[in-house]
Image 1: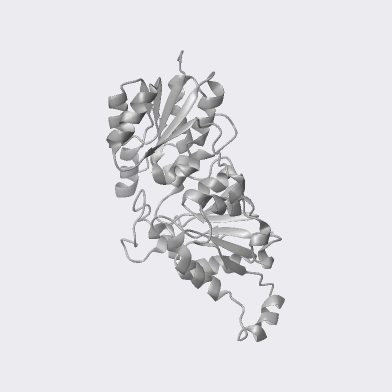
Image 2: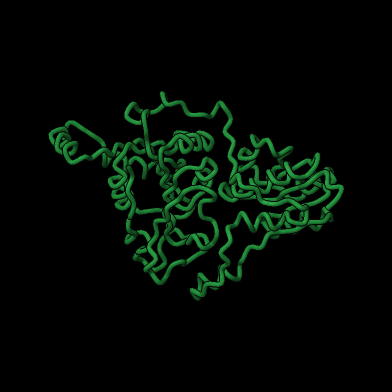
Length: 339
Protein backbone atom coordinates (compact mmCIF):
# COMPACT_ATOMS: atom_id res chain seq x y z
CA UNK A 1 0.00 0.00 0.00
CA UNK A 2 1.21 3.50 -0.83
CA UNK A 3 1.24 6.69 1.24
CA UNK A 4 1.06 4.93 4.60
CA UNK A 5 2.52 7.39 7.08
CA UNK A 6 0.78 6.50 10.34
CA UNK A 7 -0.20 3.01 11.52
CA UNK A 8 -2.14 2.03 14.64
CA UNK A 9 -1.68 -1.42 16.19
CA UNK A 10 -4.34 -2.67 18.61
CA UNK A 11 -3.71 -5.25 21.35
CA UNK A 12 -5.15 -4.57 24.79
CA UNK A 13 -3.77 -7.52 26.78
CA UNK A 14 -1.91 -9.33 28.17
CA UNK A 15 1.86 -9.47 28.81
CA UNK A 16 2.67 -12.46 26.59
CA UNK A 17 0.28 -11.49 23.83
CA UNK A 18 1.78 -8.00 23.62
CA UNK A 19 5.35 -9.35 23.53
CA UNK A 20 4.25 -11.64 20.69
CA UNK A 21 3.21 -8.58 18.63
CA UNK A 22 6.75 -7.14 18.62
CA UNK A 23 7.84 -8.71 15.29
CA UNK A 24 4.89 -6.93 13.65
CA UNK A 25 5.83 -3.61 15.26
CA UNK A 26 9.44 -3.95 14.13
CA UNK A 27 8.56 -5.02 10.58
CA UNK A 28 6.22 -2.07 10.04
CA UNK A 29 8.67 0.44 11.48
CA UNK A 30 11.71 -0.81 9.57
CA UNK A 31 10.14 -1.86 6.28
CA UNK A 32 7.88 1.13 5.60
CA UNK A 33 9.46 4.47 4.76
CA UNK A 34 9.12 7.20 7.41
CA UNK A 35 6.13 5.57 9.07
CA UNK A 36 4.84 6.43 12.55
CA UNK A 37 3.87 3.36 14.57
CA UNK A 38 1.33 3.84 17.37
CA UNK A 39 0.11 1.13 19.74
CA UNK A 40 -3.10 1.09 21.81
CA UNK A 41 -3.27 -1.15 24.87
CA UNK A 42 -4.60 -1.21 28.43
CA UNK A 43 -2.91 1.20 30.82
CA UNK A 44 -1.63 -1.73 32.91
CA UNK A 45 0.46 -3.01 30.00
CA UNK A 46 1.66 0.28 28.48
CA UNK A 47 5.06 0.00 30.19
CA UNK A 48 5.84 -3.09 28.09
CA UNK A 49 5.93 -0.86 25.02
CA UNK A 50 7.26 2.42 26.39
CA UNK A 51 10.90 1.36 25.95
CA UNK A 52 10.40 -0.15 22.50
CA UNK A 53 12.32 2.04 20.00
CA UNK A 54 10.04 0.92 17.16
CA UNK A 55 6.92 2.40 18.84
CA UNK A 56 6.48 6.14 18.35
CA UNK A 57 3.51 6.57 20.70
CA UNK A 58 1.55 4.41 23.14
CA UNK A 59 -2.15 5.08 23.71
CA UNK A 60 -3.65 3.72 26.94
CA UNK A 61 -7.15 2.41 27.46
CA UNK A 62 -8.31 3.32 30.95
CA UNK A 63 -11.98 3.25 31.98
CA UNK A 64 -13.62 4.89 29.01
CA UNK A 65 -13.35 3.46 25.50
CA UNK A 66 -14.92 6.60 24.02
CA UNK A 67 -12.09 8.77 25.42
CA UNK A 68 -9.56 6.52 23.71
CA UNK A 69 -11.48 6.64 20.42
CA UNK A 70 -11.54 10.45 20.52
CA UNK A 71 -7.77 10.56 21.05
CA UNK A 72 -7.14 8.03 18.30
CA UNK A 73 -9.38 9.89 15.83
CA UNK A 74 -7.30 13.02 16.31
CA UNK A 75 -4.19 11.15 15.12
CA UNK A 76 -5.65 10.55 11.62
CA UNK A 77 -4.24 7.10 11.04
CA UNK A 78 -3.82 5.65 7.55
CA UNK A 79 -4.17 2.01 8.59
CA UNK A 80 -5.11 -0.13 11.59
CA UNK A 81 -3.60 -3.54 12.38
CA UNK A 82 -5.97 -5.22 14.82
CA UNK A 83 -4.12 -7.92 16.77
CA UNK A 84 -6.87 -8.40 19.34
CA UNK A 85 -10.01 -8.72 17.23
CA UNK A 86 -12.63 -8.32 19.96
CA UNK A 87 -15.70 -6.11 20.37
CA UNK A 88 -13.76 -3.08 21.56
CA UNK A 89 -11.23 -3.18 18.74
CA UNK A 90 -14.07 -3.62 16.22
CA UNK A 91 -15.71 -0.50 17.64
CA UNK A 92 -12.44 1.42 17.28
CA UNK A 93 -11.99 0.28 13.69
CA UNK A 94 -15.59 1.21 12.84
CA UNK A 95 -15.40 4.67 14.39
CA UNK A 96 -12.00 5.54 12.92
CA UNK A 97 -13.21 4.33 9.51
CA UNK A 98 -9.81 3.78 7.89
CA UNK A 99 -8.47 0.69 6.11
CA UNK A 100 -7.73 -2.13 8.54
CA UNK A 101 -7.19 -5.84 8.96
CA UNK A 102 -7.52 -8.13 11.97
CA UNK A 103 -5.83 -11.43 12.77
CA UNK A 104 -7.62 -14.77 12.76
CA UNK A 105 -8.31 -15.99 16.31
CA UNK A 106 -9.13 -19.61 15.33
CA UNK A 107 -12.01 -19.63 17.80
CA UNK A 108 -13.86 -22.41 15.96
CA UNK A 109 -10.76 -24.59 15.64
CA UNK A 110 -9.96 -24.10 19.34
CA UNK A 111 -13.55 -24.94 20.31
CA UNK A 112 -13.35 -28.19 18.36
CA UNK A 113 -10.07 -29.11 20.05
CA UNK A 114 -11.24 -28.25 23.56
CA UNK A 115 -14.73 -29.71 23.38
CA UNK A 116 -14.53 -32.56 20.87
CA UNK A 117 -10.76 -33.19 20.75
CA UNK A 118 -10.94 -32.76 16.97
CA UNK A 119 -7.70 -31.19 15.76
CA UNK A 120 -8.27 -28.70 12.93
CA UNK A 121 -5.61 -26.33 14.23
CA UNK A 122 -3.07 -25.16 11.63
CA UNK A 123 0.59 -25.74 12.40
CA UNK A 124 1.19 -21.99 12.53
CA UNK A 125 2.67 -19.89 15.31
CA UNK A 126 0.55 -16.96 16.46
CA UNK A 127 3.32 -14.57 15.36
CA UNK A 128 2.68 -15.67 11.76
CA UNK A 129 -1.04 -15.02 12.19
CA UNK A 130 -0.24 -11.59 13.63
CA UNK A 131 2.02 -10.90 10.65
CA UNK A 132 -0.77 -11.83 8.26
CA UNK A 133 -2.83 -8.96 9.68
CA UNK A 134 -0.13 -6.57 8.44
CA UNK A 135 0.35 -8.27 5.07
CA UNK A 136 -1.57 -5.65 3.08
CA UNK A 137 1.04 -3.10 4.15
CA UNK A 138 3.59 -5.12 2.20
CA UNK A 139 5.69 -6.02 5.24
CA UNK A 140 7.16 -9.46 5.78
CA UNK A 141 8.35 -11.43 8.77
CA UNK A 142 12.06 -11.11 9.49
CA UNK A 143 14.27 -13.61 11.34
CA UNK A 144 14.96 -11.66 14.53
CA UNK A 145 12.29 -13.12 16.80
CA UNK A 146 10.60 -11.27 19.66
CA UNK A 147 11.69 -8.02 21.29
CA UNK A 148 11.74 -6.96 24.92
CA UNK A 149 13.54 -3.80 26.02
CA UNK A 150 14.57 -3.30 29.66
CA UNK A 151 15.37 0.24 30.83
CA UNK A 152 18.80 0.55 32.42
CA UNK A 153 17.31 1.40 35.82
CA UNK A 154 15.59 -2.00 35.95
CA UNK A 155 18.60 -4.15 35.11
CA UNK A 156 19.17 -6.39 38.14
CA UNK A 157 22.74 -6.38 39.42
CA UNK A 158 24.27 -9.69 40.50
CA UNK A 159 25.12 -8.11 43.85
CA UNK A 160 21.39 -7.85 44.57
CA UNK A 161 21.18 -11.65 44.62
CA UNK A 162 22.33 -14.11 47.30
CA UNK A 163 25.99 -15.05 46.95
CA UNK A 164 24.93 -18.63 46.12
CA UNK A 165 23.20 -17.34 42.96
CA UNK A 166 25.70 -14.78 41.70
CA UNK A 167 27.81 -17.13 39.58
CA UNK A 168 25.03 -19.07 37.83
CA UNK A 169 21.35 -19.72 38.38
CA UNK A 170 18.30 -21.23 36.73
CA UNK A 171 15.12 -19.13 36.56
CA UNK A 172 11.84 -20.88 37.33
CA UNK A 173 8.74 -18.79 36.56
CA UNK A 174 6.19 -20.28 38.95
CA UNK A 175 3.30 -17.92 38.23
CA UNK A 176 0.50 -18.14 35.69
CA UNK A 177 -2.87 -16.46 35.29
CA UNK A 178 -4.79 -19.69 36.02
CA UNK A 179 -4.02 -22.47 38.51
CA UNK A 180 -4.45 -25.21 35.89
CA UNK A 181 -1.41 -23.76 34.12
CA UNK A 182 0.74 -24.16 37.25
CA UNK A 183 2.39 -27.17 38.81
CA UNK A 184 1.09 -28.02 42.29
CA UNK A 185 3.49 -27.55 45.22
CA UNK A 186 4.80 -31.13 45.40
CA UNK A 187 5.60 -31.16 41.69
CA UNK A 188 7.36 -27.77 41.97
CA UNK A 189 9.58 -29.24 44.68
CA UNK A 190 10.24 -32.31 42.55
CA UNK A 191 11.15 -30.12 39.58
CA UNK A 192 13.52 -27.96 41.63
CA UNK A 193 15.21 -31.09 42.98
CA UNK A 194 15.61 -32.40 39.43
CA UNK A 195 17.09 -29.08 38.22
CA UNK A 196 19.77 -29.50 40.93
CA UNK A 197 21.26 -26.01 40.58
CA UNK A 198 20.79 -22.63 42.27
CA UNK A 199 17.25 -21.54 41.34
CA UNK A 200 15.51 -18.17 41.39
CA UNK A 201 11.72 -18.39 41.63
CA UNK A 202 10.04 -15.62 39.63
CA UNK A 203 6.46 -14.45 39.98
CA UNK A 204 4.21 -11.65 41.09
CA UNK A 205 2.68 -10.74 44.47
CA UNK A 206 0.16 -13.60 44.14
CA UNK A 207 3.04 -16.10 43.97
CA UNK A 208 4.90 -14.98 47.10
CA UNK A 209 3.31 -17.54 49.42
CA UNK A 210 3.96 -20.49 47.10
CA UNK A 211 7.50 -19.27 46.44
CA UNK A 212 8.20 -19.13 50.18
CA UNK A 213 6.80 -22.62 50.65
CA UNK A 214 9.11 -24.02 47.94
CA UNK A 215 12.13 -22.07 49.20
CA UNK A 216 11.57 -23.23 52.79
CA UNK A 217 11.53 -26.86 51.65
CA UNK A 218 15.15 -26.50 50.51
CA UNK A 219 16.23 -24.13 53.29
CA UNK A 220 19.27 -25.12 55.32
CA UNK A 221 18.75 -24.81 59.07
CA UNK A 222 20.59 -25.86 62.22
CA UNK A 223 18.38 -28.94 62.40
CA UNK A 224 19.30 -29.96 58.88
CA UNK A 225 23.04 -29.45 59.35
CA UNK A 226 23.79 -33.15 60.08
CA UNK A 227 22.23 -34.06 56.73
CA UNK A 228 23.94 -31.41 54.58
CA UNK A 229 27.20 -33.34 54.23
CA UNK A 230 25.30 -36.40 53.01
CA UNK A 231 23.29 -34.29 50.56
CA UNK A 232 26.54 -32.83 49.22
CA UNK A 233 27.92 -36.35 48.75
CA UNK A 234 24.79 -37.21 46.78
CA UNK A 235 25.41 -34.22 44.48
CA UNK A 236 22.39 -32.22 45.65
CA UNK A 237 22.92 -28.60 44.59
CA UNK A 238 19.40 -27.13 44.68
CA UNK A 239 19.39 -23.78 46.48
CA UNK A 240 16.23 -21.71 46.08
CA UNK A 241 15.87 -17.92 46.25
CA UNK A 242 12.28 -16.71 46.21
CA UNK A 243 12.17 -13.52 44.11
CA UNK A 244 8.37 -13.56 43.74
CA UNK A 245 6.91 -10.14 44.52
CA UNK A 246 10.35 -8.62 45.08
CA UNK A 247 10.86 -7.29 41.55
CA UNK A 248 8.75 -5.46 38.97
CA UNK A 249 8.11 -6.90 35.50
CA UNK A 250 11.19 -5.35 33.88
CA UNK A 251 13.41 -6.53 36.74
CA UNK A 252 11.91 -10.01 36.50
CA UNK A 253 12.70 -9.88 32.78
CA UNK A 254 16.28 -8.99 33.69
CA UNK A 255 16.49 -12.05 35.95
CA UNK A 256 15.23 -14.18 33.07
CA UNK A 257 17.70 -12.61 30.65
CA UNK A 258 20.67 -13.45 32.88
CA UNK A 259 19.61 -17.03 33.72
CA UNK A 260 21.51 -20.05 32.43
CA UNK A 261 18.19 -21.81 31.71
CA UNK A 262 14.55 -20.86 32.10
CA UNK A 263 11.78 -23.16 33.33
CA UNK A 264 8.34 -21.66 32.95
CA UNK A 265 4.66 -22.39 32.83
CA UNK A 266 2.57 -21.14 29.88
CA UNK A 267 2.81 -17.47 30.83
CA UNK A 268 4.02 -14.07 29.66
CA UNK A 269 7.57 -14.45 30.93
CA UNK A 270 7.93 -17.50 28.69
CA UNK A 271 7.67 -15.16 25.71
CA UNK A 272 9.98 -12.61 27.33
CA UNK A 273 12.50 -15.45 27.73
CA UNK A 274 12.08 -16.16 24.01
CA UNK A 275 12.93 -12.53 23.25
CA UNK A 276 16.28 -13.07 25.01
CA UNK A 277 16.89 -16.34 23.11
CA UNK A 278 17.04 -18.36 26.32
CA UNK A 279 17.06 -22.16 26.45
CA UNK A 280 13.50 -22.69 27.70
CA UNK A 281 11.83 -25.67 29.37
CA UNK A 282 8.12 -24.90 29.12
CA UNK A 283 5.60 -26.74 31.26
CA UNK A 284 2.09 -27.24 29.90
CA UNK A 285 -0.96 -28.26 31.91
CA UNK A 286 -4.51 -27.83 30.65
CA UNK A 287 -3.45 -25.75 27.62
CA UNK A 288 -1.43 -27.09 24.69
CA UNK A 289 1.41 -25.78 22.48
CA UNK A 290 -0.71 -26.58 19.40
CA UNK A 291 -2.71 -23.42 20.10
CA UNK A 292 0.34 -21.72 18.54
CA UNK A 293 1.84 -19.85 21.49
CA UNK A 294 4.94 -21.91 22.22
CA UNK A 295 8.39 -20.21 22.53
CA UNK A 296 9.31 -18.37 19.34
CA UNK A 297 12.66 -18.58 17.54
CA UNK A 298 14.65 -19.95 20.46
CA UNK A 299 15.68 -23.37 21.76
CA UNK A 300 12.95 -24.97 23.86
CA UNK A 301 11.85 -28.27 25.38
CA UNK A 302 8.16 -29.02 25.95
CA UNK A 303 7.26 -30.76 29.21
CA UNK A 304 3.67 -32.03 28.98
CA UNK A 305 1.52 -35.09 29.62
CA UNK A 306 0.07 -36.14 26.28
CA UNK A 307 -1.60 -39.25 27.71
CA UNK A 308 -4.64 -37.62 29.34
CA UNK A 309 -7.69 -37.63 27.07
CA UNK A 310 -9.33 -34.62 28.77
CA UNK A 311 -6.56 -32.24 27.67
CA UNK A 312 -6.96 -29.48 26.57
CA UNK A 313 -9.92 -28.71 28.80
CA UNK A 314 -9.77 -24.98 28.04
CA UNK A 315 -8.05 -22.57 25.68
CA UNK A 316 -7.17 -20.39 28.68
CA UNK A 317 -7.45 -22.15 32.05
CA UNK A 318 -9.37 -22.70 35.29
CA UNK A 319 -8.83 -22.12 38.98
CA UNK A 320 -8.93 -25.88 39.54
CA UNK A 321 -9.05 -29.07 37.49
CA UNK A 322 -12.62 -29.68 36.23
CA UNK A 323 -12.10 -33.44 36.61
CA UNK A 324 -10.51 -33.24 40.05
CA UNK A 325 -7.44 -35.38 39.28
CA UNK A 326 -5.22 -32.73 37.60
CA UNK A 327 -3.27 -35.50 35.86
CA UNK A 328 -2.04 -33.13 33.15
CA UNK A 329 0.31 -31.72 35.83
CA UNK A 330 0.35 -34.41 38.53
CA UNK A 331 1.57 -37.07 36.09
CA UNK A 332 3.81 -34.99 33.86
CA UNK A 333 7.28 -36.54 33.41
CA UNK A 334 10.26 -34.26 33.95
CA UNK A 335 12.31 -35.71 31.13
CA UNK A 336 15.32 -33.41 30.84
CA UNK A 337 18.96 -33.16 31.82
CA UNK A 338 21.05 -30.07 32.52
CA UNK A 339 24.84 -30.15 32.17
